[in-house]
Image (cartoon, rainbow, N blue to C red; front, side):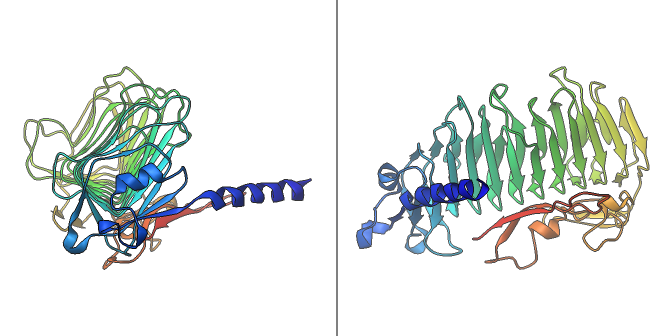
Length: 391
């Protein structure tokens, strides 16, 4: 019976793959290709791949795209981006998956990647890899957005998904309403660099913020009873502001747990000198965090092994932190660095070190976009999960 079912499954897969097609888009429609991406979308069927030729001298396909099918978009030239001057609108549908590789939107702030509305009866999934974009605005109900290896001039605003190894102005996770077809995974924000902060105001999911370089982490809502983590981030704010660099200010009335650990931080004192603040709606635990500032907290926070006045140097152009953050994180083996030494506080420490996502001289090499590498096993099966994509 097992063999029979397996053969049926493979037959179904082969049949599905046989119907998928490659559609080409080239400048002027040369070689029988489509001359516009819109024309290729119209002709495509669910599951097809649209292969786009970058135009000579970086010229643009000037068109707004409406994607209303499950499609994959890739560049015809390895390691090169195609330029679309226009807004990319993805219409939702249960089970719809849209994957976009190597898209450039140029330096036009009016052109964004947008999810047009909520999904009913299921979920829409949007994957964005190795792109150069203006804004990503996909914080719609029942929408998962996975974005990796991309440069975003403005904000990345999602309602659920995985955000890894991007450079953006800011990253936020929120939602227009509560998901009615919830995803089974957490919201994960790993290995990013933002010139502003990372904010969270989503009441449907746990969150994990690991190994980011940013100006602050700001939490305004959480899932009731959730367990959330802010681990191994580097916070550097050379301008000063009116809220703490780690600010837990829940406005949705939900209670949950937030662990703040192994972070390295420095900020110019503005309206507040507080390092971590909590308005007492969440249960906050802070440990093994190191600050150049005097360590000051506000609100109810369970604290251990935090340090202030630590000698560290930060660069928000090279995205580095050096100094006494080395071996300053949690000494437990679960948090060891890639070389199995004690955790370095900041974004180069632990399993999700920036070294995974931003290797030196990466250029045309494949890009890592997710790693889960447990350090210990007491019994049973050790699950190691990793993924990446080609440029």
